Image (cartoon, rainbow, N blue to C red; front, top):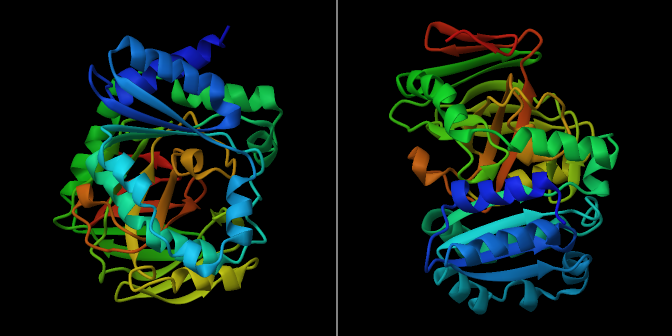
Length: 355
């Protein structure tokens, strides 16, 4: 019998986040260790009269592909996968990492090349389907978080099992204030950065696409970002951990990027394409149930009292225009000495909202 918490999460994913209804074609993509949750979601989809399909990822599959794939294979567009997603109303992604460092020693240029090729598929999913992402607790993720599996399970389910309609109402005031703002300024340790968000659209992360959720995000005007920022936590992308990231912006573009670990990788990702050196997102973490950095962006970017910035692609729903195969979120902790200003108004200090 499934853990009652697994059944509750399945109900949230199917009936709240993606609102699966009769006749919906639903693709449930899942890592093998999350099969219990995937089956619960599958069952609820069937009960709702939908047409679900289970799509399992086998451990080691990604490593084998990137280690052995030749250039012609990396550049081959997956037509079958594109056809499938174009004929799908709902996409669910349930991760359950068995090895979070699986791709550490893979040439990052191979991953970058593949992301560029498959971008039309990811763009379609984001813009044309109802989609949701959830990470199922595993020993690998628990180890990254410096927790036992039981502790990490409690952490995951506690952060996700909420009344998300009520949570959304709490964040609406922040969105309204953000939408009325021209210049956002962020001050903190080795950080003084500003950008315009005028005319852009703030979005409340209410659990419709991420679970857990709890953020308000927007897209800065691409050429307005000025200043420097030091990211308090390691920035993780493609299975690689980059520590001590410091970025300096001028007229929106990263003009200087350093790191204390994996600096070459950082610079290679920033140089991925024409849009990868510009900001696509500014996010404000609002989930105060999440207090600990666990090396998983799905949770970490929601930490109450933090902000995150994503290099690369912007979300169309924010009216952002930056395009890139990259979308790399990096997190800044403001809970000790940090400030957020909306124009001339101090709206957050030490991680606590003043509005």
